[in-house]
Every structure is written in structure tokens, then in C-alpha cells.
Amino acid sequence: MRIAVDDLTGADIAAFLDEHVQEMRSISPPESKHALDLDGLRRPEVTFWTVRSDDGGVIGCGAIKRLDERHAELKSMRTAAARKRAGIASLLLGHIIDEARAMGYGRLSLETGSEEFFRPARRLYEKFGFGYCEPFADYVPDPLSVFMTRML
Image (cartoon, rainbow, N blue to C red; front, side):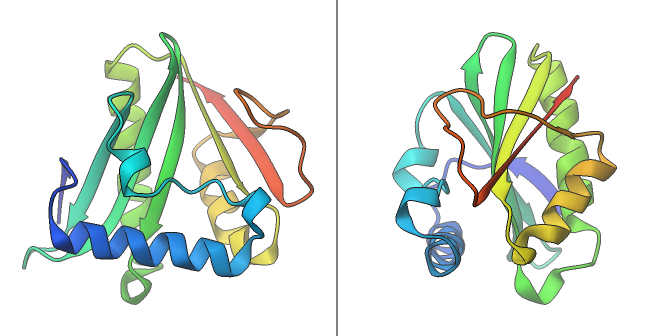
């Protein structure tokens, strides 16, 4: 496996992200869906990483979005369905935390779902030291959202 910053121009990552957005739309109503589409991820304040298998296929992704000079938001964490529970998300999250720290951020926050579907994600974030918090940035309280943060 290899993790690298991605410029989001490849058809394979576009398809992988489209699948992610479609899945989030099927689980959460529009007002509670916060997944960024391809254009949202191409913004200059976003750094995006792709995890590729040894044969070059996309098996995971994740991003951070700059909120201010010391605070970033974790976005678009996803693992390919066939590779879930294989340690990819842990490997990627550790990498992103290290990269965020190296970029000078002091805090990393995230929004995820409160439904049962998102329980594995919440457990992963807890394992990496994220604690529950109030909404941050432009988020508002939402019973379908959970907010988490950690200092770096």
C-alpha cells in the first residue's frame, strides 16, 4: 500500500468518491449530509490523500480542510468495501494526523454520523484520541451528526 497526496484528476478516484457521496446520500437526508463532492475537495484549502494497493487500485482516501491557521477538519475518510477491517483506515488516519501536525495545525476536528452505520468510524476516531465536542466552524446542532476533536 502507498499513501500519497492526490490531485483528484484520475477517473478511478472520481468514481471512488462518487460512490462515497452516493452512499452518504442514501444514509443521511440532504440537510445532514456533509460529504464533499469532487469539486469541494479540489478547493485550495483541502489536502487530499489516496491509499492505493500494490496493483495501483484505490482502496482508501481521506482529506483535511483548513479552517484557520491552527485548526483543520478531517473530511472524506473512506475505505473500499472489500478492504474494510484490514487496517487501512487506521494507517491513513495516523498518516493524516502526522501530516496535519507537520503542517502546523494544533487541532483536528470532524463531523460524522450518529446512526449505527457510523459506529465503526466513531470507534476509530476514539481510538486515535478524538473526543466529542460541540459543533465547530459552520456546523449547527443536528441529531444525525456527531462532532469530535483532538489536539495535535
